[in-house]
Length: 69
Image (cartoon, rainbow, N blue to C red; front, side):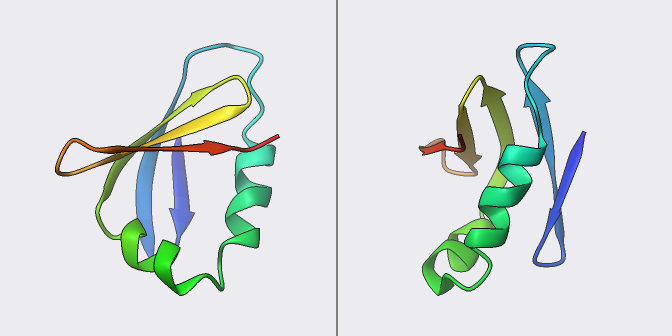
């Protein structure tokens, strides 16, 4: 699956079949006016969705853990 945000598409990998993508999309709507998050968004390579936590993986190997529930 792909997530569109700020004119960039990022692949989302779900580790459980029952994980709902709508909670992540709602959280992204909350962050659409956060300048620092949008600046970091340009460096994100992929998103792993594990239950109620989204793991954003950056190009340099660092990770950001975000609770989406």
